[in-house]
Length: 242
Length: 316
Image (cartoon, rainbow over all chains, first blue to last red):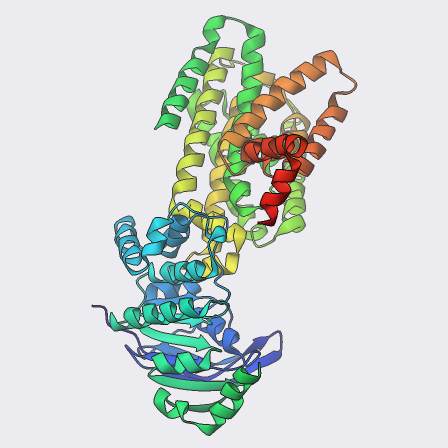
């Protein structure tokens, strides 16, 4: 099995056109583990993932994969290094078929590898195999999320970043999706999960970070944070009220 | 496979057309093939990306000028290839800059660059050659020109299909839908766009090089005529640039229609083409080939005969 990559973020600052969003955050996603980053809307989660994927440049700070800095790497370089992003709101290519979406996920792989990975992704998500020729935009929310994860897996990532994969899914689909993530992780891929669904995210994760307004406000083992009063008050309280 | 067989049959029939020995038919077919080739090559890049390129006239004109300059020194196939390569080189150079733009900016600047090339060539010819137009001698026979254009058009069709199915074709469509998203999957958007733009330019340039000898006398205003790109875009839009059938059907309908209208209603010709464009943009946004004809038929049929049943179905 493949070995997961370790991701380390140090003192990262980033923002949009002079408006700072991340005020120097640090985190480690240890190799082969599931790390979850929780935080409310507007805390800077998406900005962090965009910076990690290389579509946004940081103001300062460093991102390292297995000890090597990523500065100056294009998004494609990062994919080559083994990173893959499952973006928020799924962001599939709705006018393209399931097969075409998956093939585009394996853009950098050779044709043979692409076919091999297609088989494996269909093995993980059999429903995608039944719908290879269907347009991605015509599938249900859960199926689209499976496709988004499957598309990211096509590049054989050793570090998978996910932006709110449970958003807008029916509870049964959420369970299914988290189970799939656990399987992917067992096969050796490091997972960094960004979630608002705090309760379930903490259940699958090994480590957790809490991001609030561009700063880390708590971190630790996932089981510890589950019992943390602050988290209970801020997030679970919010979830019940909302 | 069925499509492949259809393609081969059509190619064979078209290749045998000069046997009819009818200059009128051949000339019609030539115009039709030229526009088919231009529309297919335009759709290769602009279809998936949604970038409205108006550079085809520039590519076409550059190819034509390559012929004007090289015909007396180089063999015919080399001249045509060189015309395509000149357009490709030009596309590469301008692509590095203009492919960073989007939407109306991209359309306007590609148009402007075409005009720039036209005036540059006019200037160079006036200053160094002391002439504006060029007369071509030793031109190949009209059958050779026809076959050349046919080969380029067929090559364009094959390239369109193969490129569209390749990972670059997928990437180009991905870029058209969401460039940033495509980038996070490992696509280098600039590189893929350049590839598509250059590929599309080769065919337009080669067609210009082949067609140049038809006119025997060329000047910048005839070969860099913006009307060429307007018709190309019109054909692709009316036909539908996202399937190979679109530009082909568009070119056929358009050439026949414009020939018929020009002969029968010379004063209404351009007005009717304008109406055609408006109607197709309003009612066939995906073009003739991309339109859901069955859906339209059902809609008309059901509306008149079984309106109640439809409303019921819709509410379910």
